[in-house]
Length: 195
Image (cartoon, rainbow, N blue to C red; front, side, top):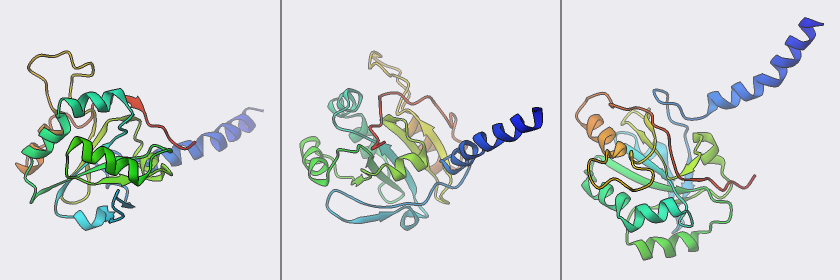
């Protein structure tokens, strides 16, 4: 009986293991994708090879995202990065999102980077995006070098001394140094996937 149960257990576990191996992992090549932004323009990860790419999973209806945009966390972080060397792509995997909603939100918040449309959730699941925001930093060779939270202040209570993990990771990569904290626990709302 024992071999039977072992075989059953393996049969049950294998798809999970295979799925886990397909998601983004720090130190591994980032999953390829091509998505359209809110204006219908296509963006492929491969077209940004040679640049550091920041991916921000987002949902304007999430209170955590709203707090960061009210405080200009994302906009300020983006504005400090060298646009010739770094690309910032927001990704909305919310099942009910539409390009029109993203365009309206982008106009309201006044930022310039694209909001990639992933209502099917295919890319979000490939990356293992759990929360909004959930941040990834990919190096010039297309390898994931950071995955986690935007900063170390989940409740927005810190008056000073907040560590911006994304800024720290990008600065390290552009300086040829290892990323100090390659992973952190993302916080925020759960990604509202289709299923």
